[in-house]
Length: 431
Image 1 (cartoon, rainbow, N blue to C red):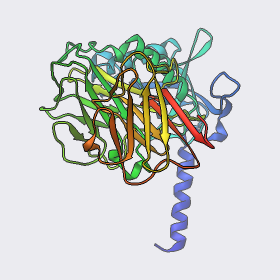
Image 2: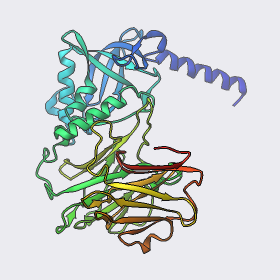
Image 3: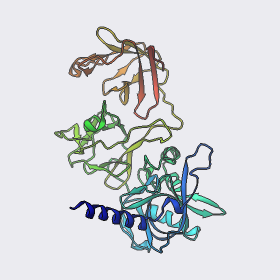
Image 4: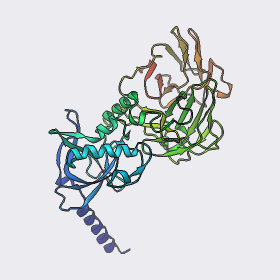
């Protein structure tokens, strides 16, 4: 393409994009995103809702943009269950269990405010695909009500954190945790119907941070599902796992979690067998935690064929972050010679480390079955060596080189939610 033609074409595209921009920063006011002093600034617009697509998507005619065009808007910070038929009439809508309930609740909130809304964004160019990504509030009894806050509090939607629109991440993750504890909406595990193995004691956790660069090791991230019933297996064929962004994996019909055991779903590619399954993703599914203003995190969710949420893990823990094993384990690290970490049970109760992990940045080790330490016992985790030679009190990290710094390091025992069970530091480091 001739250079002049290319320049003209680029200019025309830029002009068209600017002309169509529904919410240019120059046309918006600014204010704090949240009613607190530490809140970041947001751009603010108003508009009128012209159509409600589903529980997290709507169309808005935005005031002051010079058009009467309706803009496709994705509500920041939440993900409702999927709707398959979109309609103005509630009776004509179709979708997954919980999807129509979310849409109906959103419609109720919007109609109370006569469909007039306030839109907010930290970045006016923020989008989800072709949709604008915006926080949406509606006027109710003289004040602006954040509709996403209501939907996630009532269990109508999952928490969907976002790097660019992060002002709401921390609050929404806390609200999701409260809804889960209250077993409301999505968190009611028999709302959609009496599913297979209803009431069966299942637990789920996700290793969301692979050692090193996550993008180079998709299988370093995994989801583990444990069956706490010591006698009965739990068939989960047709069940499905998703993250907050709706990357989805469905288990084959023969998949079963053994009594007292677990199965593991790895993000990447591999040979599926009765205990190991592979999602087939090119890149990891789960967001890493950021302990900063962005307050990133994620969640893993297990649904049965009825559409009920049967097990989950939303991370990190940001409220009420305690664990019954806190204070039960004392750590000791040896950084020279045959590197190892010793874990001593200093309590009067047995401590089952299954579902906990030990880490010394950037390395981590996840404990599995046969990891119970009785009162007064000590378990040794040796850095090098083959895990195939493990016994109950003698484990092997499986590394081929040293990982503990002679000059100083920190070793932590935590849950996968990030709740700290024990910590020890030596040399120049501190817990």
